[in-house]
Amino acid sequence: MDALPLAAAKPAIPPAFFGERVTWVHHWTDKQFSFRCTRDPALRFVAGQFAMIGLMVDGKPLVRAYSMVSPPWDEELEFLSIKVQNGPLTSRLQHIKAGDTVLIGKKPTGTLLIENLLPGKTLWMVSTGTGLAPFMSLIREPEVYERYEHVVLMHGVREVKELAYHDYIGNDLPAHEFLGEMLQGKLLYYPTVTREAFPTQGRVTTLLESGKACADLGLPPLSPEHDRVMLCGSEAMNADVKALLEARGFTEGSNSEPGTYVVEKAFVTK
Ligand SMILES: Cc1cc2nc3c(=O)[nH]c(=O)nc-3n(C[C@H](O)[C@H](O)[C@H](O)COP(=O)(O)OP(=O)(O)OC[C@H]3O[C@@H](n4cnc5c(N)ncnc54)[C@H](O)[C@@H]3O)c2cc1C
Image: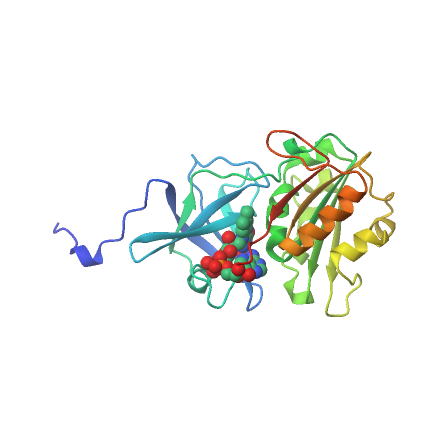
């Protein structure tokens, strides 16, 4: 067979990445979408980590940090993505379709790991926007339910339609063949909306500060004695909740020393 002409040849995948095939794309809104892709069996990660992912553009990798939505036991990978109008990556990534190739970095990393937290009774996962992504992986990690009596998932958004995975978390997950029973009565989902009517309204920070979130969930006030917190949101939300936690005596954990809370940026504002 004749060799392909050079112009038609696909650019080689750089060695730091796996080239994976997109298998599913779902657009939640005009600002958010999710997609799944194949996963190289050699890719290892821990729930809560992120990897550099992206596309080949003009023969070069164009990549950004993305948290894995899928749990480590899933044979595929799933991601939740923003669509930034003029964003170098997402102005392109939002147009991917099944069969396209995406780049997946070979070295996932991050601080939102259960190993980075000291033992406790309740694990709070506090997110805004796409900051939900790492917690989608963690709420499907059986070890989380072995370590904690309660696992709270807070997700703050502006509009109801931005509550990605809302039906999955509320309906599908409790009925899940393997996980359903394990998370019954343990996983407490607490979505909140700031700009529309919804059963829970208001900013995540306000709901934590006022004690309303704890009261609504029937949990005692936030304390480093029994609570552990993972934060993933905008820099402003992270800073506000971090200040609130530190005022109550929480200490930040890291990959070198566990603490009573850990934090990761959901994105960087330039
Ligand atoms: C540790 C880490 C994990 C991340 N995980 C995810 C993830 O799981 N899903 C995801 O969509 N993004 C995630 N991001 C952000 C992501 O890396 C990119 O910034 C995003 O994909 C946009 O890329 P871009 O090239 O189109 O625009 P960029 O030039 O990267 O960003 C342009 C601007 O868009 C805004 N922006 C970027 N990302 C977001 C976002 N997620 N939500 C709201 N505004 C945003 C910021 O103001 C930013 O300055 C993560 C970032 C970090 C640091």
